[in-house]
Length: 150
Image (cartoon, rainbow, N blue to C red; front, side):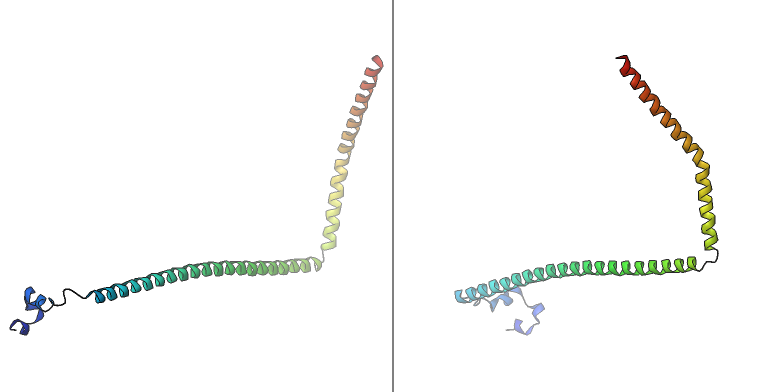
């Protein structure tokens, strides 16, 4: 009883176990109930872990699907913006060409330059065609003579 007056930290180990000797052997019904409760607790924890894992997996799949959707939407928006900008740039360029007072003069100069280049190449092309025709005629003549000699 004198030890009971002391703080718990100063009591001897023997005195601490003295009161628990009666409870050192719990009744089997208590043990079974405790074990049943522990099993149920473990089952609930396992179920909770399983549900959490399923939820995390679903959330991951949802976030991947959302990210893919965002990517598709961004690509569409970018494509639309690029097309609009190209359309605007082409429109500006066409207007500038149509409003150019020297456009007809430049076109006439381009046509004249192209005609001059073609006329300059024409004699060489005609000579090449003549040589090819001569070569074909000579080959045919040689083939005809070879047949006559047979």
